[in-house]
Image 1 (cartoon, rainbow, N blue to C red):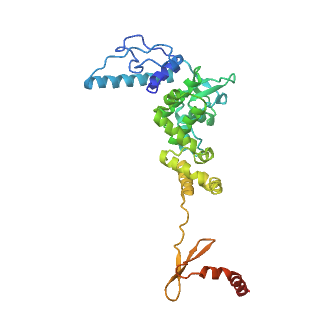
Image 2 (cartoon, one colour):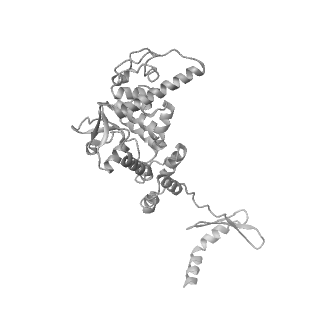
Image 3 (spheres, rainbow, N blue to C red):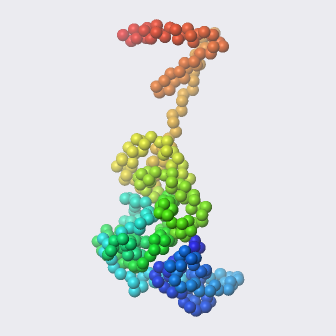
Amino acid sequence: MGPGMSRKTNLDALFGRRPDPKSAGEGEFAAANPTAPKAEFAAANQSPAPPVERQRSGAIGAMSSTLRGLAAQADAAAALQTGVSVVELDTALIDDSFIADRVADANDPSLTMLVESVRESGQQVPVLVRPHPTAEGRYQIAYGRRRTRAARILERPVRAVIRPLTDAELVVAQGKENLERRDLSFIERAFFALRLEQHGFPRETITSAMGVGKGDLSSLISVAKTVPEDVLAAIGPAPAAGRPRWRDLAERVQSADRRVLTALVGDPAFQAKGTDERFAAVYAAVAQKPERKPRAKMWKDAEGRKIARVERSADRVALSFDETVEPGLADYVLDRLPEILAAYRASKD
């Protein structure tokens, strides 16, 4: 199941369908399985893929390929919705995938819309689960977490397809479904890739689940490793923020005043913002430039010679003498500092 494998191939494998033994030109799924599966995923594709059709040229070939692709997608959707293995499960028996792919967002408006859609029209597409590998009688989601959550909110069972999946098959199905149904934000994809790597999956499995090449995968993982998870949890998925801004944020957070960030994310007004607004607020907090120092002033004598340089900051005044203009003046002032200090204190009294 390499990176180029189509969604139809994944669905055939996961739902136990076998390819039509007809020739590629006549087979119902000819366009869906152009190549044989790799050995690593042989368990997910127990039947060999049908032979590849000879390449047609011109507009007729392109149209034929497009029609076959649409037919394959329609058949996959039908298998999801009408398959005899679709059952209703109590949502209390369903656990999330062992690899988190999304970042929680308490203010996610799309979840509210999904709940209302399920309330009015019912659950149109079943979720995919597997028997829980360690808890008898329970199930684990491959994909459909948001649909399961909507059913839980509505206190109704969720329509599901149950398949015995390996860990690799589960995360590939999870990644493919998420990428095709509702795009993950950049940072969600980055952390999904990092968690897959931390779990020990080989790069080939991760690229298949993520639908990216090795170079892009390395970039995703690199950014995820630099973003503190507590900052991610406070911000949420932030779909409008891409790789450059997340990378910039991660770098600035390293040197930011954590007390400022803690106060910001703990503010109810911050928590009430949308996820993109929360990103902008944190970004602004860590991106503030230090106050510019005022320009130094020169102290001149009656003849206009620049005798001393005066530099001021919020809590410090620096005075430096030009020894080439008035040699020995600095030592003279230093020797009389006790007198100057005493006179200053007396003036205050």
